[in-house]
Image 1 (cartoon, rainbow, N blue to C red):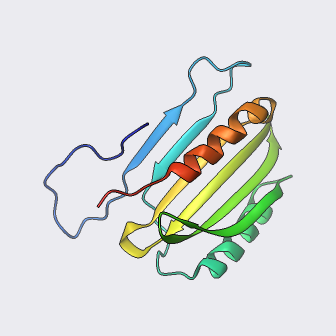
Image 2 (cartoon, helix red, strand yellow):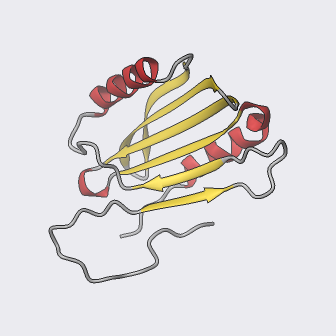
Length: 139
């Protein structure tokens, strides 16, 4: 279990919290690690989930050459609306899968991004889903 934001610092109230945490697989087979990134989003957090879903799908298909959407759906996570997007693509270093979960809840919104090589996705896919299902925000 990883905890996010275990520190406290004094900054002006008008500053945005764009905290980010990255977890990376140690000693991956094949040399390319899987990663999980959790961050505060910089997108409009007041957007409706269905509109966000459409924007994300369009952005991936238009912006990532050779991408294919595996699954895109709206979910409830930790009591809030969320968009779940799983897609794959091939690049210079091989084929990859990415699972993104955008939890849309105003100031408490979060973005979880899980990425890994296709060669290890059989192992890492369930790990990514477990990360999505275990996401809980602290008060």
